Length: 371
Image (cartoon, rainbow, N blue to C red; front, side, top):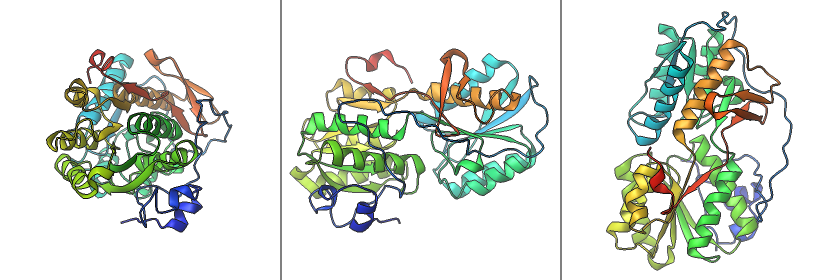
């Protein structure tokens, strides 16, 4: 288990107020060691920074331009609403393109060893392209590099790997944008001096660790009096997420004013824990989840804000990017890529493609979405 000390938190640039024993307990967990880039408190857009392509390249890839290709999608796990939605987007894009045979397959738990085994098996059986959402950015890298060495096109989405282990990564929203949206919504609900905790998946899941680090940096900069109690793991498991949220409620009592859910499982499970504890209106729940999972809690006013993007669009974009990569239309140095009905998407950070800004679902608009 990764635990970060106060000294490490300072190394992340989180500031004295985050590490004073008010914003954090003796240690906090869940972030990564990378530099942070908190957005402006007033919403001013950050300037775009050019960066050379840092993705990998397949070895001796055959000419696939316009030819039928077989693609496998291996997400963190299958059988949950979020990845059902990304899988639908992938299937929609494959059907629209007409020259792609795509399937989704993977573990039923967010287990990196199982995910690696699935990818390795598809390298052996033979595919033209692999889409993935990593459970661990470092551990997954060798098998993805093996795919590249076999001439397979490799594109990530949702959760990245090491950049040189894949060609492109479709980022649902920039990490600092997600961090800002989550923290601003929480501050709006619990106030500038409210205290909160986090239920995440694991401390090594790359996208969640990145969001948490950006949340910490943005909170210190723009909402410095908010109090960070702790971060707990729940493995993207519904029962464990519910139990962890319940433990937080019981442990911190009236000090706990809000819970962040960092996964599409943890957020509704936390909302259910708050509901069953009779704490609706007393403990805010804000997090990342699909609208359908959160509608019951939003409609009952137990949850006021759900932050996400459209995961159907995310899967759709990833499939479009892989097709463009296989065709040779998306190459190192590109600044944008055509993504079907989504139009042109921007290339950022060398080898990332940005889906767009995060979206906040509320009681007023959540009924308009079905995924």
